[in-house]
Length: 327
Image (cartoon, rainbow, N blue to C red; front, side, top):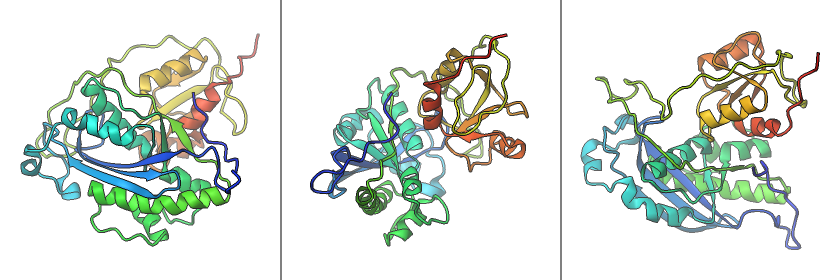
């Protein structure tokens, strides 16, 4: 597994030598937020090592279903009817992503949607690392009121023309990323790069949308649920920041993850952790990429004072889990 950050050793020119050689700033608009939702438009701004724009590309995509929240993205069924299928644009999309770090605002979401579309098309996205501009803004300590793209844009004086239009969102992000990248380089800040593991299989088990449109159906999983063996170790209590995980700790997950949830839970189980399906006062740790969300698990974790880490930090902790105490 790749390290979470690059090493920012400065070169004789002052630019960190370990920074990536190119970036693909991406934005996708989708029919919704669930695992069986589809991409309906995509845009890519290709940037060089210093964040200068090389070119840009945009396409609509026929999702082969209703378009979801038209009042947000403005793409109706009539507009999308004649658009290419994702399989038709996959090769061109790949050419835009190849050999570059994928940059997005809330990159976990964009990467997941892209990886699933490629898996449906029986292909693999040529992406090995991603960078989330939310994480970078935190690394830089930018004084933002929230994590919205419009706030990041306003901080750098970037004017948005068409919010929730993939091409304009990607442009805005590219223009905000450039000064962020330069600020990081000037301070030798390590970039928060995370590994991307493409899906290699996909089975569509989509549920047709119910009357009422967006949000009126239940998301489905692409893998059947299975019962895990009971954890053989006693619960040693809560995780403490800066310390190691210990076998027997109860770990719960909330929200989307870049690594498929089943695989992440398998890793936790193999490390000797207890994978919990809910939050209680006995939960040792909650893993979520969106600690500000209002999901029931996040709310309960806040009420109980349960420690919270993101997926990347959890991946690091899994590398060195302390054995359970004997006797």
